[in-house]
Length: 113
Image (cartoon, rainbow, N blue to C red):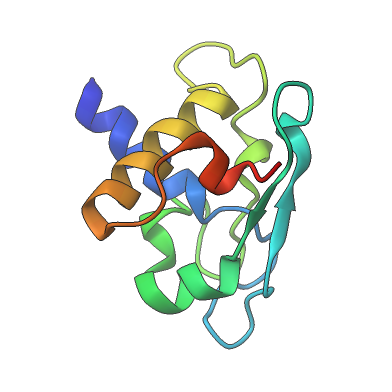
């Protein structure tokens, strides 16, 4: 279960672009303001992640190439059934990937004050 949640979090981390996800065409940054109730919005550098990861399926685990969806399309604040809720998906997937890639892992690293 932990491995699945970890993989899902990485997949979800890059799913913030609704359009075609390729390094050159990816948006520079995406604001994740879904979390504003408890923390500040996360400025997600989508283009940098897309260029580094190269394989959109690493994060955009649903949908076909060119029709990727935002994370919040499936991962809601209060998820139902087998879907992981948004906050858990982000924290698990992002942090675990960042640990491996030596990226930021502390709250204030992503949730700027």
